[in-house]
Amino acid sequence: MTRLTVIAGPTAVGKGTVVRHLVESHPEILLSVSATTRSPRAGEVEGVDYYFVSHEEFDRMIANNELLEYAVVHLKNKYGTPREPVEKALASGKQIILEIDIQGAEQVKASMPDANLIFIAPPSLEELKKRLVGRGTETPEEIAIRLETAEVELASQGSFDHVVINTDVAQCAQEVLDLMQSS
Ligand code: 5GP
View 1: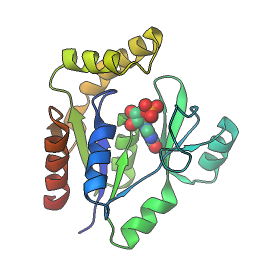
View 2: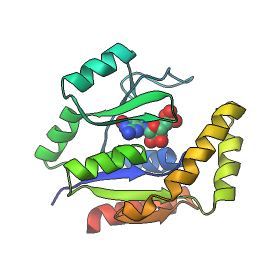
View 3: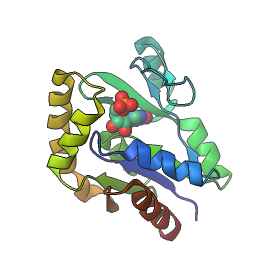
């Protein structure tokens, strides 16, 4: 049976890299493109990385019930999953992955209990701090907020169907694929 796979995990755990690795080696697996109110980072492409929308447009999508789930992430911007591409993929028997935050994952589980929730965990909190500081995309204030969020997020892994530790990207992606195929 085709199930929706939801990948979540704390900031900087490398879940985006794992998911990209997975869909690049398995082009038949679709990846949901989220809408967000945050500004594009250098190199990000509209419609590929995100749909970059205004706060007004995001609120219109909520009001029209166009989002499967949405959340305010890192106390700042709204992120949400457009409902239609997910429903179309599932109806046509395709596998689709959502890479979203933990609040969003919990909302999906509540509305679609068949969804397979996979938590990507870091080898340790220390390693997570190292990755967050190392990638150099956030200001010190943003890093502090993200680390606080990460500690709360790490505590919620018990509500997921599976936990996979990301020590090595290729190995982590393979474990996720095995879980998608077996559950
Ligand atoms: P970033 O700004 O670094 O691209 O993403 C920040 C966080 O937003 C990540 O944890 C990411 O998983 C989450 N996120 C991305 N898209 C969605 C979405 O559609 N819904 C929810 N709830 N979170 C999302």
